[in-house]
Picture 1 (cartoon, rainbow, N blue to C red):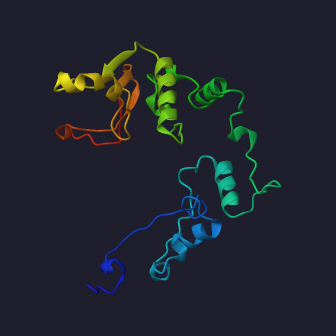
Picture 2 (cartoon, helix red, strand yellow):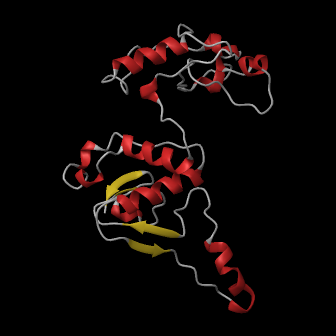
Picture 3 (cartoon, rainbow, N blue to C red):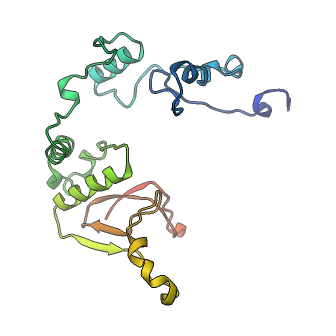
Length: 213
């Protein structure tokens, strides 16, 4: 093995769509962001480039796929501020938080009653949010709309030494850390879930696995 080669000569695969969002560096000007991108790395000239030409995720929505290409290549019209104006069918009009959030959920998951009859009809749909607190709110609304009886499950929350730890139970129960499931789970029969943390690997399940209850 020639150790003078990058990464010791081992095969390393980088994947990126350079039309999309570049690196996020706090308070960095545009020039710094561009200089920090992979094409400006000294390794760039030593890489073998392979280009993917088909958008497999948007292959059934050619209009949206073409829109993404136009934006990425700078061919889409912009306003006086340099911003791209989205088509009306790409956004949810904002009136107030509760009403607009309900419109968003209704537009993505129009009929949750159908899920138990045809689970695959909704497997390719999801709502993404910038913060975990927002998705917790969406999940809470959707599980209450899902047909069936609501069941509440809480995590094991017993203190070891109640003399010194008992006063902290309520505080700890209110904390939802990134990664583990929340302290309180609201579930219904046949509802879709994602396995966030698996502590029983003998069953062959892994983190991120989708399942139905």
